[in-house]
Amino acid sequence: MLALRCSVYAIFLVRLVAIQSSPDVLEAENAVFFEGKQVIPRSEASGQATLKMKKGQTVSIEFCLMMHSEIEVHNVWYSNDGESDLITITVDNKKMGEVLTEPLYKDGAGWNIFKPSETLDHFIYLSEGRHQLSLYIEKGDEYGVEIDKIELFLHNGKEEHSLDCKVFCFDDISYDHGIADTGFGHYTSKGKLVQKSKKTLCAEEDNINIPIFHDSARKFIISVNHPHYTSFANNRMADFDNCKMTLSLWSFRDIDLSQTQRVTQSSEVATLSVTPLKTDWQSNLISYGLIIEFSLDGPRIGMMDSEIGSVIKVSFRGIIHPVDVSMQYFGRWSKWSESTNKTIYSNKTWDTWEVPDFRWREGRGNSIRLTITAFRIERIQIEEIVMNKRGLAMDQSMMVYYDGMTIIEVVDIDAWWRVNETMTLKTLNDGRVFQGVDYFRIYRKIPWSENNFCQVFVMYQDGNVRLLPITPHGLDWIPFGSSILIGQSDPMAVRPAAPLRNADIDPKELTIQLAYLDGSFLSLKLDVTMKETMIIVSNPFYARSLTSHPFLTFRSMWVSNGNADVDNVSVDGNEPHHILSGWSTLRGTSFAFFRKCISKHNTLSPDIRVKIID
Ligand SMILES: *[C@@H]1O[C@H](CO)[C@@H](O)[C@H](O)[C@H]1NC(C)=O
Ligand SMILES: *[C@@H]1O[C@H](CO)[C@@H](O)[C@H](O)[C@H]1NC(C)=O
Ligand SMILES: *[C@@H]1O[C@H](CO)[C@@H](O)[C@H](O)[C@H]1NC(C)=O
Ligand SMILES: *[C@@H]1O[C@H](CO)[C@@H](O)[C@H](O)[C@H]1NC(C)=O
Image 1 (cartoon, helix red, strand yellow):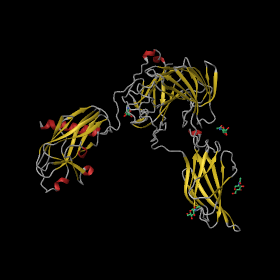
Image 2: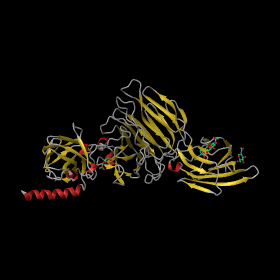
Image 3: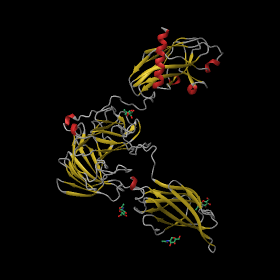
Image 4: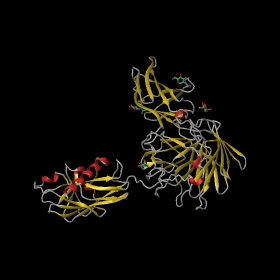
């Protein structure tokens, strides 16, 4: 009997080491509230507190599993001063074992000495979700026992787990490839996904970037459906936590102008220097030259900072007599602008100068120069000087088609990132042509609503497409999440694009002929059913090599499990992969981009599938 127990224990140890090196911990003081719950501060206890328990009491501690796991109670840590106590431990009403505490007689000093029990005899298989571990004091002296913590081992094949469900993941979500039903897919050659994603902490950055290659890409289907996980939360607000906010392009504070020497200050993107220029002893006036040299991000990395106009704001301190300030800028045109002069009368008020669009250059080589003239003896200081991007105007949209079932709109964005590029849209039913379009969108009537429409398709001039299934019954709208770039792009670009020239739409058939700036073209057919929204792409001509330039690029966001627009990708119905790690290329003809973990970001944004037919 003893031998058997030993061998079981040995296997057990090996397994523990192999699967999990440190146990998960439940603090006893976090027990569910009960009448007379007593939490005692103890310096030696984990979490510096214990839960006092007396004979006959039962307490429960809740925990939550993210996946199906086998649970063992490794140790119950307790302190005792007095006679021994007998504690029964159950998980979800199944008895895991008993702990007999050691007696100790130290006149109260024993309460700060913590001892582990041993691993309890039994284990239990639990499904994902919430569970309860309960402690019952079956026998004990009048002083009871103090419980510090309970250590659990979870066996589920994963290295990392936790005992709370901040994130809830479904284990049983999968996509089959369903190629057989088309009859074609079996014969087409394999396509290839290439991992070009990077990590981010900002949920509004498209860090997931997966170009898709295929040697012909003559016909393929992109479809979207509601997430396969079950959630009725409809979180859809942008989350700018941990995002680099670029409203302010640079700023400096506390600059003392009354220096006799040149002084400089630098930030990541800008350098400021102040030099006393000249003193007019007659009038006792002195001029200071303040120069700020800076670099700006531009379209090469998908930004507009170098293209859009800006606002320079300055606030002064120590103004006694009015101070003259003259501002000039230097940038794209490689010469100093005319000066704009202002007189400053008061402390701590913002004086502003505006610089129009297209005056800066991308990267380095931008400057502004302030010439400040004041009485020599006055100690003028700049409290703060900031350069911001100008405010953006609202998108301008125009309805170009309406028939009671379908609406088509064209939209003009202020400061579209493909600088000076726009597309032309033609409605084939009436031959009208709309110029200067940055994106267009198609709405469909919601079947369960008398007069509401929902967006199902949006296409931007840079080739990006966003798709939605019909808004589910009972909701007003659901958010977009992942997007897909249709058309050939440079896979090395920071912000890939397949810029469009024309889109010709047949609104009745919902077919669209696309012509790209690189000379490529292709046809789309939009098909909206209750279950999914689908586009069938066919008859392409590719202007560039299909080996070096992907025909599609999947773009999305993953910050962490539960804060992601996509978390898994599966190919041809096989075992899924994590969207961001563990692979560099994947081959197949059917790709599903989906989520297993309920996301707080865009909770109901759709899953996307790409199926190469030919
Ligand atoms: C500005 O602040 C200084 C003190 O820093 C003060 O002496 C001066 O009177 C203020 N100027 C005005 C115009 O209020
Ligand atoms: C602005 O002030 C500068 C000197 O500070 C002067 O050279 C320039 O002529 C002024 N410009 C205008 C338009 O008054
Ligand atoms: C875009 O147009 C503006 C105004 O015509 C021009 O100044 C700018 O240089 C153009 N930018 C590019 C990248 O062509
Ligand atoms: C699928 O995604 C979830 C959430 O990111 C992750 O925990 C899981 O490991 C992924 N599946 C695979 C096989 O990597």
